[in-house]
Image (cartoon, rainbow, N blue to C red; front, side, top):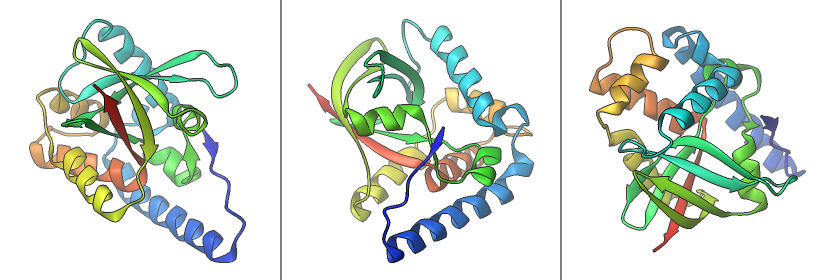
Length: 195
């Protein structure tokens, strides 16, 4: 992950600093309940690689395999993501595990940089692959819709996901809180599917 550059303006720099501090504060409060392996970017990459292998043919409800084009290499890059579909839109969030969010709160995953370079993607949901265009969400109304989709949707596989990420017994409330943390500290994106 690399840091997002500032936009050079004083008010823009102040907004970026405020956002970074909010992410860091949320991560500091969340870190004690996370399992150690998955607090870091390295742990997240390991988990994503395992999930890609496990779900090579079909992904479970609420998850997908996102294929982007490398911004430098031009090669296809795949990532396992939580993907919540609402009609012709799919909401995803780039996660910042607590350790990373504390150390580098504005870090950006390579797959998001790839989308910034080329928003045309492919997304496999269950056994079907869709073409689509991905973009980061900034509109307040769309952010509310995305937050509701990401945070309020709980599938059976999310209980296992919660068990991997958090200490203690999984519950619907803990899952929603975990998804809320990811949404608030990550980068929400929407994929508009080409049917």
